[in-house]
Length: 176
Image (cartoon, rainbow, N blue to C red; front, side, top):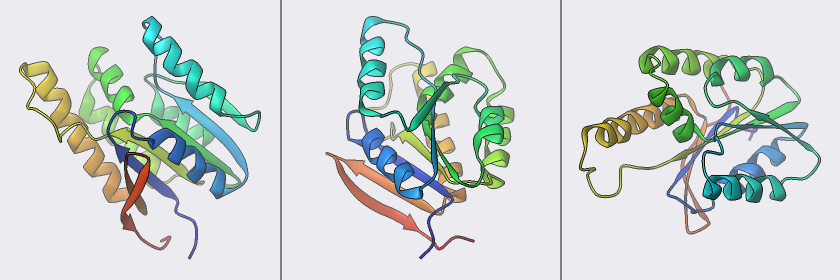
């Protein structure tokens, strides 16, 4: 079986998604690019970013891109190089908080993913399994995240749900 072109890794907080995604990108072979969408807005996030960076070795080139993900992917996704995006959910939050047109940004991202020339691994949180949020913004975010995950999963040739560090393959199609 050929290696997947687009892989989506879903799961809850601290479920092992990023580590699993790093292994999937490394398995693709070639160069490794890590596109980080997080911004270090507080001490906790600074520590999370430090922890993620410490796990990656010198083979990885890290790019911080909180908003213009589609443009960066269009530049970076090419044969012989695996690109890991960590994470779609933070990117979505950044787009919403910046007041950007979510439908337009999502459509642009999906178009780039559909034509990506090299393997792309995307990490996203599954936020729809818990309590219904008590405010409109949080509900809008949860709903937008669910829709984004569905749209990316439809494009992906491989979708994996990670819980407690254990992968559950939801979709595994041969490369088209």
